[in-house]
Image 1 (spheres, helix red, strand yellow):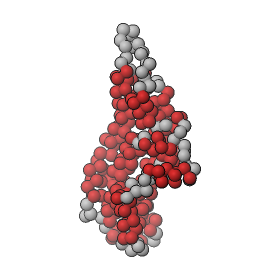
Image 2 (cartoon, helix red, strand yellow):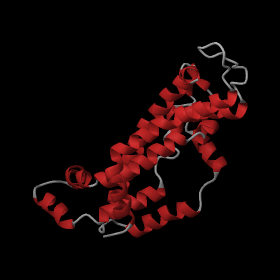
Image 3 (cartoon, helix red, strand yellow):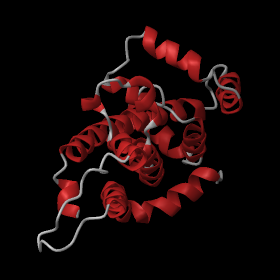
Image 4 (tube, helix red, strand yellow):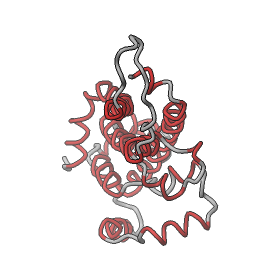
Length: 232
């Protein structure tokens, strides 16, 4: 059964597309979120409170699906890899959590970096980021899981089936029953593969990779979530 699923060219294509979307999207989202959060965490930021109010406002009110679709279309992002990464590039919640984490970093460390001749970018790169592994790992996992499970953006912005992520292919298999004609005889020759079993096998195959990532960042996960949610 798993042999049939893994040999399906659609599954392999979906894996390839999803891995590309997750890798690129997580890298971009984490980079822009960290840079934005660090800037907002500075007390001397001009109009810092105004920017925060504008950002928090987006948690309560959004432009809506149709205006967002029109913006993406007008920018020429339809049916491109950027349509899967740019529209949801920064999560407001993740930005606020990381900002709170940065505010908890002792100011003395940054001042010592300035005394050694580092610029703001240097302090951010060589002092703040190395101290922020728990927060970066936690927020990165949130972004990666969201991108891995995302199929709504693909339904809106992708028209080429060769660019479909794994979740859209999985949806087509489960919802549309595209395995309905796959009455395949097993290797022993005396057992029929049931369509429902194929669906469940496909779901399991699509879920395992993201679950395998978690143990590698588990030690950072709880610490990063707690420190980033409550200012020390």
